[in-house]
Image 1 (cartoon, rainbow, N blue to C red):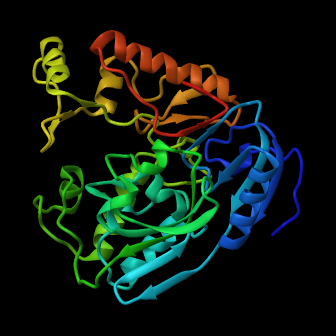
Image 2: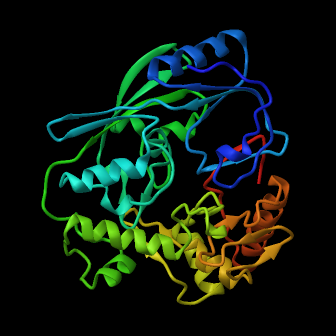
Amino acid sequence: MTERVAGVRLAPYTTLGLGGPAGAFVEAGSAEEIVELVAGADRAGEPVLVLGGGSNLVVADEGFDGLVVRVASRGVEVDGDRITAQAGEDWDALVALAVAEGRPGIECLSGIPGLVGSTPIQNVGAYGQDVSQTVTGVRVYDRRTGEVSDLTAAECGFAYRHSAFKQEPDRHVVLAVTYELARGETSGPVAYRELAARLGVELGDRVPLARAREAVLELRRGKGMVLDATDPDTRSAGSFFTNPILTAEQAAELELRVPGFPRWDTPEGSVKVPAAWLIENAGFPKGYRRGPARISTKHTLAMTNPELSATTADLLDLAREVRDGVLEKFGVTLVNEPVMVGARL
């Protein structure tokens, strides 16, 4: 555990390169240190921000007036088909390990920036996979009870880009995550049309794990979604808006406005609409700029800080313009995916 340091700028610890100073900043190298620091701050009545990879975070220009605990715990344990990783492990490194060892289940989540600890919170997903399909348990520190416990997958309340952790965002601190990754020679069934096309296979087909991973990385790089210091489009928080899920009634209203709009019907009877399509057709193309903040030139869903000259206020002004434009044209309200710290869309 490092010493507490006052006034550390948070911008360098986020992929957006945005965020003001921390009241105090400290790095925790183990689960025990994370618990000790968070519990101590709670007893003292000090606000706490648990910081992972900063890839899904929008921090206010004013910063965070409290203790920032940067998660730096390491360690991966293998027990048969179960792999348990500490919260501070790099997510893509874990995916690469699973692929190298012939363990399908998370190969389509390659290239997603951030740490293992954030994956169950967001129910991280891409290209037809999400972590709820493989997570069997999450070790947490419960700030309400002061206890460390192991939650089952059912207790995590997983849904699309959602979990019980997001419902009570200040209650649990993720310490470690366990995934069920049985050995296999090929990927899971390819469930995403764009990926199937890149691989030259049909939906439902399986391919060698390494081939699936490389195809996903190629697709993500083409959208500026793999961190690259030489690519200004990667100075983002990934997809800024989730794909809206509409009720049957809301979908019918949108059909009146835009007959034949793109959609995915869910087994529950709701309708998922691609947020990128809504944004582009509301008049916000790739590269659309508002001051120093702009929409990625590669992917309409990413709000970027390309020259690292924007403020958080600049970025949120752009995001609000996009959200309001989509609402006015389509009657659909976009919801931000990144976590807001001291800021609101």
